[in-house]
Image (tube, rainbow, N blue to C red; front, side):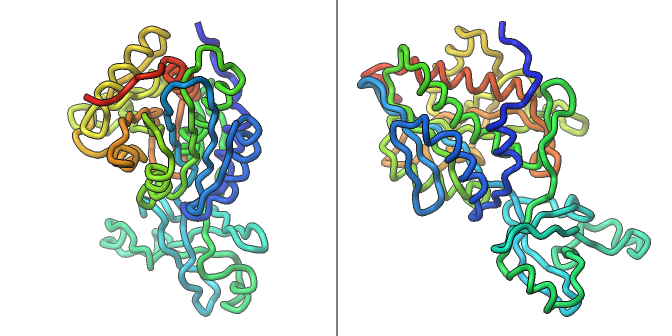
Length: 357
């Protein structure tokens, strides 16, 4: 029986606190470099910002596991004469969640703190209160005196994230602004680290990739789908936990926080890999859940599946509440069980294994 998690791993916490909007993944890259490079037989970077780590063992097939390290963000597009910053969104941000948030702006000179602003509810008409604000009705206030003062501290094209760090809420349940998908990135990196320490029974070559730019079109995954020769691929991301109010299971299926990794079954998933992952979960007594998806998933899996003329691909997700909000919730027990599942899967691969069907 696996012991209960009472403390978050330092590697995961550092990843969650790293500020890494798509295309600006510098802080997350540094964390992956710190924790993963020394464990890998081969470690490299590429032109789109991916971190690619390899453990070689035996003459078995190669399995590539990806988890994206980028997150949602805001990009500064204009500064008005009063010194207020206007922005566009990086990734799928719900505009109703932006106003009144503390943000950290990443600049060449360091972090600049700010607050997202909107007219107070008292100053909105009855009709305006009913509407989702337009982006041009929102701004960032950095306390600047005027435009000249603001541009001494920031530049057009600087990016921002919510200034909100990870914390444990209760037991193994944590809150963070970017569990999507620092948790999946941590999983694939930690799988490689554990396999590097304990290679007993490992016949496969394992390639773990911290991918970039998933939130703006799975661009990092597209690069490794063509650049890494793999016999199998697994995209690790977060999935919707549907165990909260206003989430009709008839519409969204049923996946629960704390009930184990979600194994996707559907058009974007190789059926042989799906069956094997389920069989391994049962054998290892790892709790798991199944999600049905009739189309290409909104994960790196959609790119991996089509790489090199077709790579047998699976999608494994960590249950998460309140996706793409400043306070996402994950049970760290689900994160650990996802690692256990993928370590066991890697060790199950033998020479001659194929995903052809």
